[in-house]
Length: 582
Image 1 (cartoon, rainbow, N blue to C red):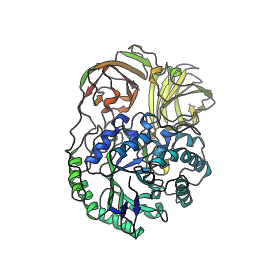
Image 2: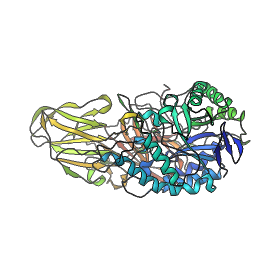
Image 3: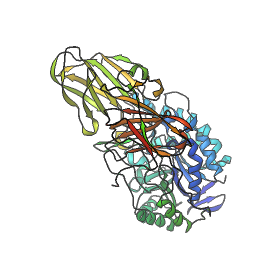
Image 4: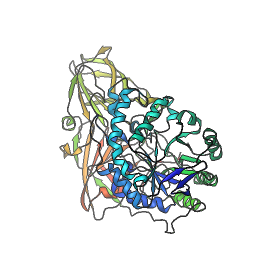
């Protein structure tokens, strides 16, 4: 593939003037059998480049462990597919990526050290970063443009200017790591206009991120970078959603006007997102700017390609705008994919989470509740058990809850404590000395942006009942990465969180959306594939089911309901329900 070079007034590709027209596409948010489809649609919209983050937490889930590159994490295959489609790649390896992704891509095991200073020169952070890059870069080098591959440029860190850390030595060390690791294509940074001074690195190309006001933002970039290409590193064509909000929509008229303004200024652009995809399983991030706010499962982002990979109105309009400034393929805009509809799938089998916790994780004994990080756990839930010292009424107090705690006494639900609502105490009645106290705590997503990245999960601080500390805890990590370990039986009516299972027949697999009207909160799997979280709080009321997850004939759906449902039925529909526009 041709090589990219930087001049005083723009980019050259193999010596010819070149404008980057890129769109963000995250392989880890798309089923791997759909990668080629999404890349093809990127080229048809007129993009010549795709922009790709790399999530450290998925690729190295254990401290000191090997690099995972199988199945949906096969980054080399994704890069090969991009090259086959004739697309260049902007690669963003982090180690921090933000992306509304769990912990901004930083592995949970970093937080096992309570004093580690993330995104700094702290050796407790830098040494694992060094080891990670040593594992990762040999898989990237063959795909660099200098080796005939599609990767024309690589980003250093991500929006570092917004971190407030100002550790220039850390940024310089990352540059050295990349260059000594064989990355010999141009490097760049990306920051919002107000952060360009703190996020930039001398001698490294700066780019600026924004949603509107292109002229002012590009002017700010030029003030910080008198020479070199003008580029919007992230043009936000939509936005993400959080639980309890509306569905974010950005006016097509407004974003089309801004895209035209960028291109008319002879600037390069990366559209964030071209295709958002899905936070499958437990991978969504969260924000905490004084109030903890977890991100929803869908990462539709109101992007040109929707969550199911279908062109939206923005797709066609962006294509028309790009055609004014660059050559766009003559092929027609691809139609929406076929969708599957199937009403009334009855979930007739049940497995109690509390009763079968030992099938899902290995318990540890401790005098106090252990956090997820102390248990070596990244995602899912932790189950804490102890006994109450006496009978009678009292107040249960928890030091801190991260993020949502369901309380049970002798297996009966008592109440919920939510970090989002800053709840730490509730009144309960102990039926007898030695009554069982159970706390089920959900990691709803680690903070991915700002000062709150050190976001441990579980229960911390003293837990007291009527002022008396509780000890002698059994702590069971429940990552819920293998629901096949459960033993199901005909559905019963006992209280408590439970998994519900049913089967359905499919003649020809296709994309679809799982709707759960009457269900409250939990997670869902189809044929063992983790679709993500649902919550009646909204805005999202359906879960995307990629067609490749289904198979001809019998299929299985499992739903974890944390509270209770008004029905035992779910359905598959041709359309999503992402909630009313905000």
